[in-house]
Length: 248
Length: 171
Image 1 (cartoon, chains in turn purple, blue):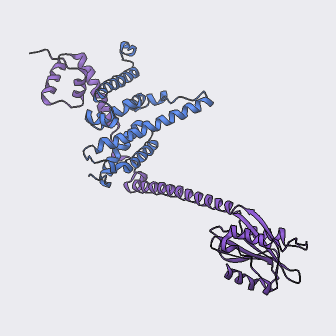
Image 2 (cartoon, each protein chain N blue to C red):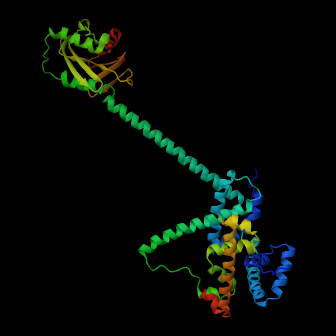
């Protein structure tokens, strides 16, 4: 028979009852002959039993409602919802940001917050007031040619004689959208209206708006945006605008 | 696929709370630990399939949560220490040692790693393999740590009663 000498691992397994019966008997016999080793192992065993006793009564712990299965699941669901909500709001924020950015870009490119604000500004600059308009009727042909070049069919200079307005001036301007023109007409009493045309931005709808004492009626045809601008008191403009629209 | 149903949760709950108490020391932070760990467990359950490993796995989640929390707390303590160098240490008081539950006081002096292992093996009756799974250790480490933990617990106990051989303390 070989000399049996259990290592510490085996001794711990003995304490924890992890040995099979044959091994257990072998270790017990070995310990019986060695009081020092037996005392050591007995100490471990005693501590383990004392620990078990000290920690006994786990079932008697006061109930904690936060640890009930339903409460745990509820919080997990809440957390999922919170996370989903956060993810959704991130997407929403991104969307809003993109949308706002795009709109800002559009409005920057369009150079306008109000539709055809540039038309009203051009009218104020060139047609408003009493200052004489310097316009050589002979230049009308040049003007016509220039408008044709830039606006094609839309670039016709309308004849408003029948409505009592004669062409008294023309200005060429540069806008962020491209070349623009302001045609100024004047009637016998000196009232002036301006027809403004420039390459249209896609968002321009038909409509009209008051800007101070001015009225701007605007529309677009093909790629060109038009605005008829004049004093709001000039009620004849309401008849002229539909005529011009028909011409384009 | 095994469901982590309410019944098995209810059944294992007192034991998880006890395990957490042996780690944390006080009951309320132990319950907080169990709560956080189980919410984690419920979130990750879908990725688990093995019903046999359920218990060691739940204990493992509690233990990992404890280790993570403690690591965060230690980092925070280090930050605090920069501003307040005289932090009181967390060692148990002499009164604690000498009051009736002397063994628990001695147990509380063990490092958390040894407490966790002793509780799983001696109190929960985990096999060495399950304890290794729960603590995420190789089996060999479990054995050597168990040996050290038991020696140390004896040592503290003997030191308390004044009967310990001086040689062992010197080791």
